[in-house]
Length: 90
Image 1: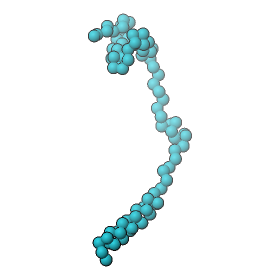
Image 2: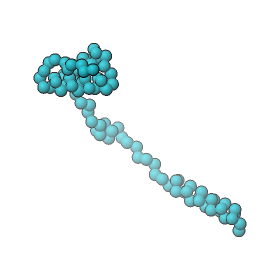
Image 3: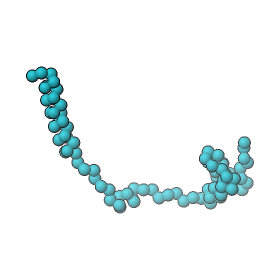
Image 4: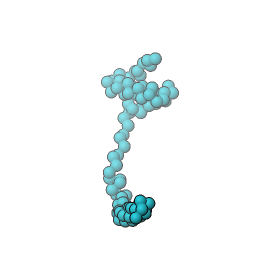
C-alpha cells in the first residue's frame, strides 16, 4: 500500500467514526412554560425617590454616565432626608 492509499483509508475510517458519533447525540430537552416563569425574578418596584430623581434627570436632559451619577447622588440624598436636588458638579 502506498502512503496515499493509507491516508485515504484513514480519512474514510475517521469520517465513518465521527458520523456515527454525531448521529448518536441526544436532542436537547425542551423547557416548559411553567419552568421559565417560576425561574424568573419579579422586577423590583421603583421607589418614589427613584422615580422623582429620574424625572429630575429627564428635565436636565442627562444621559449615560452623567445620568447614573446624578440619580445615585439624588437617591442617596433623598433617603438621607434632604429634599434639595444635588448640585451639578462640572
